[in-house]
Image (tube, rainbow, N blue to C red; front, side, top):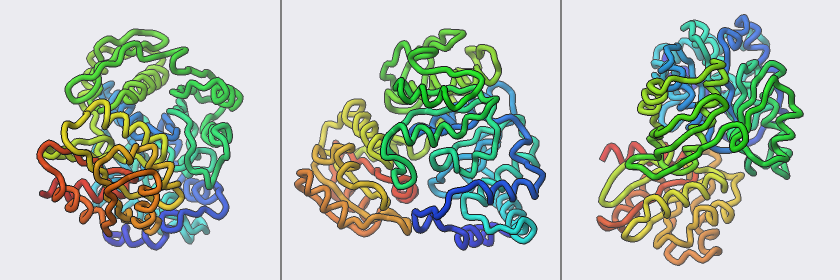
Length: 429
């Protein structure tokens, strides 16, 4: 396949991506695909990452720490912001269009051989494993797509299983409590897995402990952030692990929560190597960390910030960083769109939408996008005064920019689909 043919194939096989429904969660399809390829998911040791929020940032930090340690690292994450190639990287470099077409084409050929019809995520996951095996990576960093137990990535056997935190999300597949969600995410823990978790709730910890694994390291008990200060362009933190204290670690990402993600990442890589990390490795790795679309500052006068917060827990963190770390002097303008399956009132309350001067609601560019008119109704119901409805993300940004003065700030959030459309529209200008 060429690149466009690969994209067309994925679109034809997209079900959850279009409907938000999974009829019968199972690993059967991905297991048959992998078996037909000789099980490439076992080609290298794995650090497997799940959690409600912070998976992407933690995966990026872990990848950079492993690369700085001299390893060849295959990283698989989801979703992508602008191009599907972003999901598969080696040493932080996305797969080329040519290689992507080749790998997806190989999976397409297996439909007949394996006797299955893979979905979009099954195909991408299998293609990533095949590419990593072809390229002989030393280690794979694999981010869960949905929950854990039945996620297509869960055909790996993790040497280190990372659980960033547990919040209420994907309630259509798990719940109604955090404990139910924790049990699904704990499904990535295998008998030989060392477990590292940023979650601190004792009830959740007992669920992880009961899942098995060779060891369990818990934030604020076995490792911690001992200092966490605002710095220009990020945070300056002190990280304490079971072996070492790392002073003056600069994390080039915005928000106090990124220090917790850094502590989880450093502890996970220490656990993988079974030894402390050199200070120069940490410095080199953290300098290389970038997270497009995660509280990313795209422009000044007015400030334009994008953040992929897509659930109430993420919205709460996003609002805290916006109001506390940035505290814009002028007016505050919110551009928001989200997917169906998210409760709009809960999301807008988490984002503190009623504290914005203007709320511009749009429809996320996805078949599952919630109409902007429904978001606007929810915004008015929580007390937002100036609420506007604009059809597309691009038009919503234009509306916000037209409204904003030099001292104002625009926050674009609610979905990675919204952020993925906003970034090129802002950067191209």
